[in-house]
Length: 525
Image 1 (spheres, helix red, strand yellow):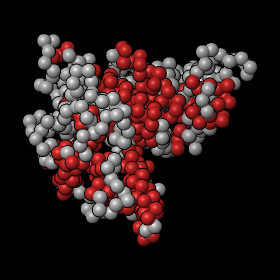
Image 2 (cartoon, one colour):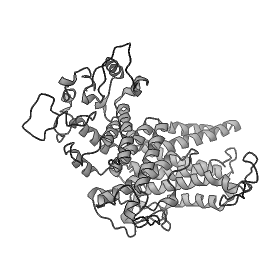
Image 3 (cartoon, one colour):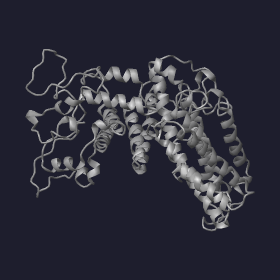
Image 4 (cartoon, helix red, strand yellow):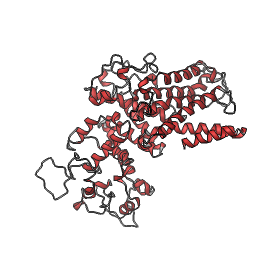
């Protein structure tokens, strides 16, 4: 296996661009684009790529093709975020073509793909040493040209790479940084804004997968900010009231093809769902509110891939009657069910986040206070009602249970144990998220020391429902790496809940329950 960066000390004039990948020819697909022509080599083909025409810091064609295919094959929602056939067609065009994918998106995909393929493994120590030698890395290694300097004199301004640990020199981190450097200028120029949102979502996946949730949150916020300006949350015909013509309300023109229309819906709902899963268990407010979203539910993946036009009539939105309980057969698949499940998360989060404002002494149910503010300071304010006694709480509890029961029969087996079908990672998430919503709803109110407490019973039941899904997938040969990495969120919440009950039973000295809960906690670990 080659190690990228092995030619980092080469001079710019004799840059051996393709040489680090000579050993990949037997493993990469036969349909990969042609190799780059190095300086000093002529070609009779006028369309042949050269290092002068290939985008700076983007992996060479044969490796890039492999990385892109890896993303599509390994990341569950990649084919929803990017229309595969269109993207691969555009990737085969010359970099000078206006249809060629934006470099920021290519950086993001390269970074994410490195989680799934050993081809781009880098030796951190070796790379670090070569950078500080002042050498220039090959384009294949993914490093920018460095100015020569001595070991005692540092160049200015300092780059981020100079102050971070060696592990930050890996392939994914470097490409994520380049994507980050390019997003701001691209958005300011209005350059391929849809692709900028796609790149942000991919980087959010990347950093969440690597356990860097602060970075993931930042990327999610950027994606939401950009897509909001593009009007992706608004369905055609549902634009805000304004004297300004509709075509001037948002930053991009209307879509012209079924693929483009469905792609925009997919991108919006992906950002919508991602924000709700990511912020489900924290106190941060949501940026995308249901009341502001008129976008229609996306079409099925099979129709999206085929570029099939799916009529708008009959498509559901968040304002549709019983949207969470009715699932039209021609517009329902695992992704739409996952979106609906995350809607439950948002409803629970809004209820928990706004309850004190609405029911604290001095306010009414709409959160309105008399002129001058609440009658009590926030320190002395008390809630005038038990949250579990409110109609909203009871309605949410019933709605979560009803949604789980309403999932169509053909989508009741995400692991494929009974149906014999292939495991569906997105459907697996759709089955776990309602139980996660139930945990978040009842967690603040559960008395885990009481066996008769209704919230405690709901809490333990939802946790064991997630455990059942863990048992099912662990009973297969499926590699968990290829699940949606957001699956770790409901697993984590199930583990935290089990620890609460385990601590309570330990305090009570209930040995049979202690043993059972310990075994269940081991399954989550």
